[in-house]
Amino acid sequence: MSVNEFNADRIAIVAADFDDAQIALNHLKKIYKTTDPADADVIVALGGDGFVLQTLHRYIENKVPVFGMNRGSVGFLMNDYSTENLLIRLNKSQPMKLYPLQMSAKTADGVTHESLAINEVSLLRQTYQAAKLEIKVDDVVRMSELICDGALVSTPAGSTAYNLSANGPIIPLSAEIMALTPISAFRPRRWRGALLPHTSNVNFKILDHVKRPVSATADDKEVRNIIEVNISENRMYSFQLLFDPETNLEERILKEQFEV
Image 1 (spheres, rainbow, N blue to C red):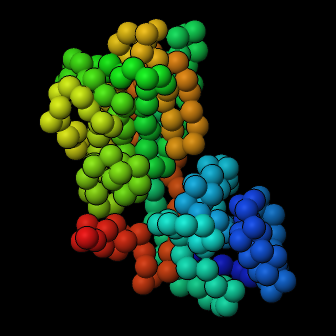
Image 2: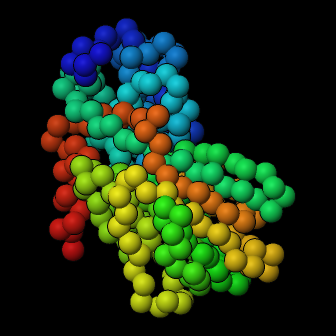
């Protein structure tokens, strides 16, 4: 279905569990007819960036586009909140297709955990001691030892989130690359990370994992005490976010590069 053909009877509205989002949900339900997300053609998500990511993950099998309206703080992945002309906004909205990263994390007890990440997969030290990581890209050792608080691999959509906070690069959505960014690197001190083709496979091996335990997180799914992590783009899945034309995600990412 194209985004200019949504039916008023097939809109689902969901909200985060904090007050502002729940108040907005009650207001919208008084104005618009809503349906169950499983039966919807489009989902309106009220909350912040974290909630819209959770909504995309929760309904991934439904392949339903999500239109977020900000009731949180930053709202980079959200549209402005308004109770007016919702169906008109939905039918004028622009879709943005996002491909997730696949995280395969093996723990010290031999169990492998699989998760998808829309923004990034991040590795973080679990104790006061710095992590030691070996980094392979497409089976080639590119760094035999990185001493750091952690490292992350980011999608273009996630490049303005945790990746940017770790001084990683902002990536245009059409670039088809991903960012490999260290978090508080101690040695090599001046390494700033790398830009990789979106087809790359990144492997982290945790060195001295008993003394220096590390966790891995795909968006909001954390796995602790890992010994190895593989990260690659998974194009078997895709997520679709909807944006008002004047504030689409591509424009926001471009604008972010000129913020001072």
